[in-house]
Length: 75
Image 1: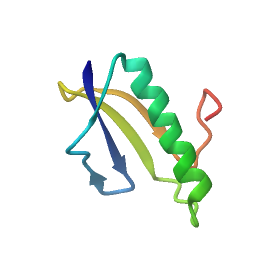
Image 2: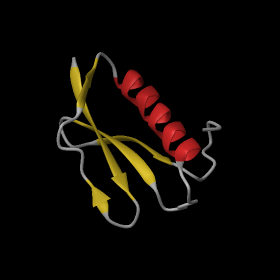
Image 3: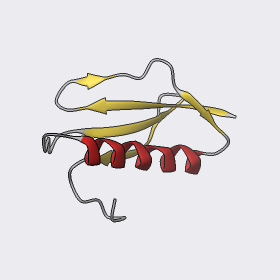
Image 4: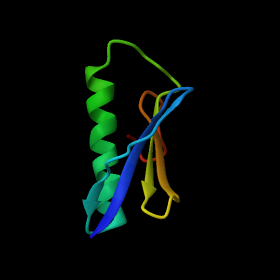
């Protein structure tokens, strides 16, 4: 199992200090997409700068996704 952190940024970074363990990086990215959908569907504002960054235990960003902007993969 590997630990991944889900940092939020909307001008000011909000670091995830707890993280979640996943078997693969792909599972962590899928979870990020779920978080993005949750924020997009439940948001009362359209903050174009809000993004979620997936960071591995080594501190390397492995994925980044904007909440209210269309991404290449349709999410």
